[in-house]
Image (cartoon, rainbow, N blue to C red):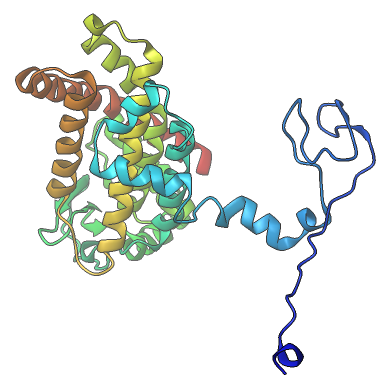
Length: 329
């Protein structure tokens, strides 16, 4: 009786891929019928399932962000072990981690995708009564990390720009600036014109534009930052490439901080000094870990590097801001 009701073992027949012998479609090397991968370039021979939508999504996104992928194996030490990831990379242990530039690029792209959804500060949502001031005046909301800017007593934000735009449309940009800022210097008038151009062309608040510009500026400053590391650690006789890897890992963490602050600010504001303190503390530990100098030397060099970074970055920031204005109007 047992033999009657005994379930038969199901045998799963695995499909054996079959290809005609011939050249590799990528490099032209000869492949036999049984070759699934090219022995010369490593490319996989195309199967029918490789041309499915599911495979496309898996290859481009799901596999990359899977919890057991290189991305997440790289993110955790990047956050919790400052400087360690650079040491591992320069020691030759690179296969298990995402390449530094690719890591920085992916994190920065995520930040720029999330940036438009960030919560605008309360100081940018209201339009104050005209106070007669003719210059761009920054004011700070103590409950927010953002600065707001006013022009002629009107906040330079989405709501305030409407009234400014109406007057500019009627009399022209240059005439508007001369009317309200006749006593200002030529450079101040130039700056105000660029501010107004960006406001009119993008429809964004000036504070938002500053954040966008500063974030993009980081791409230009990474090689500069690596050069500063080269100068400050000249006696270490490290290659510029090593400093560049350190700079990419550090700035990848900075963008992670920006992403986290964007998400948290959807619920509650974060003071700017807290964000800066986290970045400086992380940078200090990373410098100490990777370059192996004493606490005092590391602290002094971190402060000097940060100061040099600001001195070099501010003129580039102003130039980039003016360039954005010229290209957008």
